[in-house]
Length: 140
Image 1 (cartoon, rainbow, N blue to C red):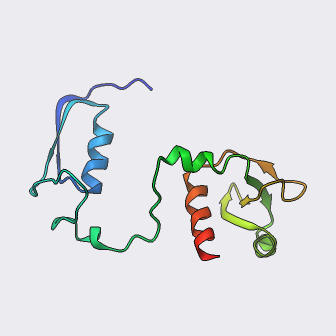
Image 2: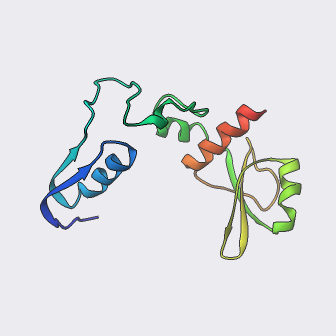
Image 3: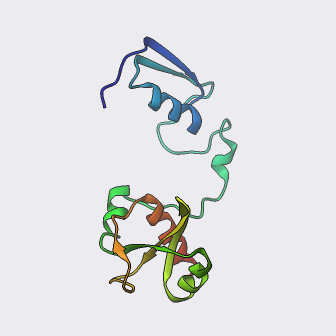
C-alpha cells in the first residue's frame, strides 16, 4: 500500500495504548509523529501512574512472538458453515474456538488435529484463534 503524506508533523497527546496506536496509524502519513507524555517513560515495563489499568490482572499473557503462536495452530483450525440452531451440538462434540455470523450464515472455527467431520475445511489460523484456543485450554 503506497501512503500519501498529509503533512510534515503530527502530534499525539499521551503514550498510553490509545496514543501509541494513533501514533502508529499516523506514521505512514506524516514525516514525523511526536508523542507528548506527561510521565517520564521507564526503560523497562513497570506500572505507571498515568495508566492505572496497567495494574489489572491480565489472565491471558503469552510469551514469544505472535507468529510462533499462530504457527503452533497451523493445520489444526477447521471452519464450517452450520445452522445457528446446531452450534450447541458442535460445542458438545468439538473444541469450538469461535462462531461468527457472516452474510446470514453461522461460521464456526474448530480446533482439532484432523478433519473433525465431512464438511470442514482447514483454514489458516489467526490471532483470534490463538486467543480463544488459549482460553479453552486454560478453562479445561
